[in-house]
Image 1 (spheres, rainbow, N blue to C red):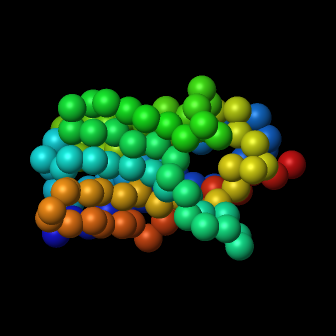
Image 2 (tube, rainbow, N blue to C red):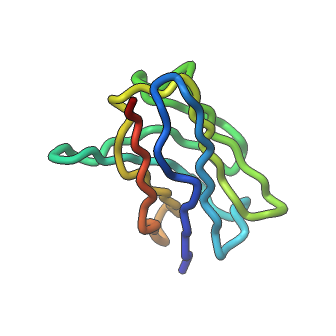
Length: 116
């Protein structure tokens, strides 16, 4: 079992930056895949970025070149650095941990609002 806690959300202006954190109760290098998802009002939850235990990363086209996912194994924390934020990025952002054949865990989410 894994508990995930997101933090770092808030209100920013278009073009601004924000860094989200996801603290895990389990050593993240033992988890196959960690990811960020987001859900805007009235929309389906969508995948944003992924980082594997080997360090491989992938991004949704909508955030590619603007967002960076990273990890700090010593702190058992995954980060999402968001730059050049747009109003379309407004959503609740969720941390996800997946261990194939074992489990799939979610945090409670953190609100990101991009508005002028």
